[in-house]
Length: 90
Image 1 (spheres, rainbow, N blue to C red):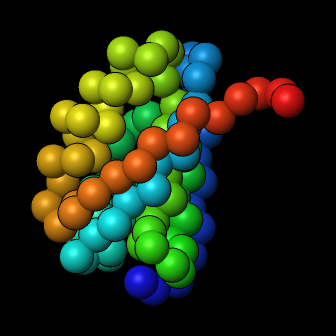
Image 2 (spheres, rainbow, N blue to C red):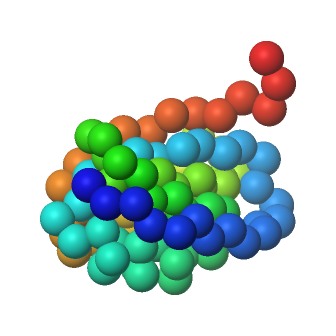
């Protein structure tokens, strides 16, 4: 795993957020593909078991599931993902 710069963007209308931990055989390519998705709010390169952490906004759980399963997991080079739902307050 490598360390990359963090990129962030604002997204509107999303009521839930999740952090998606991504293992990739080509992190640069995965980051480039993630940057194209409007629901991706932040991308952080990491060290450890995951190469990338992406914060994804969604309108509901089904929207989030569709994004992770149909868009993130099908990206070239993505080996695996783990999704952590974020709570607004504890």
